[in-house]
Image 1 (spheres, one colour):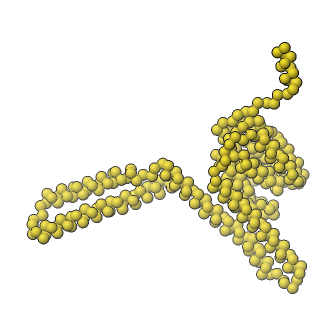
Image 2 (tube, rainbow, N blue to C red; image 1 turned 60 degrees about the vertical axis):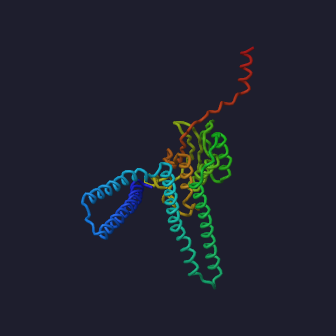
Image 3 (tube, rainbow, N blue to C red; image 1 turned 135 degrees about the horizontal axis):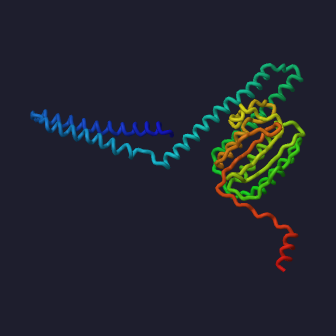
Length: 324
């Protein structure tokens, strides 16, 4: 809830309270006036003046005391802000989904209206198109559900071994055919985060690079802990991302000018961005030297513990000789 909405809410509540108090004084004044009229007595002006002062003072006191008391407590305000943000995010998501589903529905309906039921080849072609569009809608719904879960849940934060996380990603991406997968760097450190979500985001970047770069090109992966943050990156040597599109490719359903033929739902990078933000970080894209795109997930560190380097056998022997 922004400050203007919060103040407007307080003003409405206080206004209602003042109206009630004022109405009470009016009722009392009317009752007193009726008593004087029934008794056929003169109404002394000093009494009227005192009554008016008491009424005015009461209204001013209610205003001065009520305004601070109606202020939203910080914790309640934060909860309200989170609720409003969640509602707004869900509204935007529903709007985006409604817009995105119009295309496959229109495609299927258009072909069904024009299909020649007497032509088996035409029927088979339309069936293939319909199945393909339905499969795409299924993937879209799955990604929507995934994005909603990423944006709405609390992450399972724990110690994450960066080197093990890097090796896990390497093991999984090497089964993606058509590219030369390489590891640029693997850092030995323990950081605080959700290992499953970080793995998910990193794999999404790798899959994104594989879909949008020519077969046979190299794709490099790397991890590092420096400048107070954990960095996980994927570097490709494809067509790259135009500078004008780099600020918006993490939006829902924005493919940065890429065609739908790549098979994505347009939510992959939005999911990556949501996971990065869930860790208090961000995801950015820069240009790869020589052409291509480098996507980097940056997670600020609360603390990072460097793991000791592995001890080699010859070093142990040498130390024993020196001691002896």
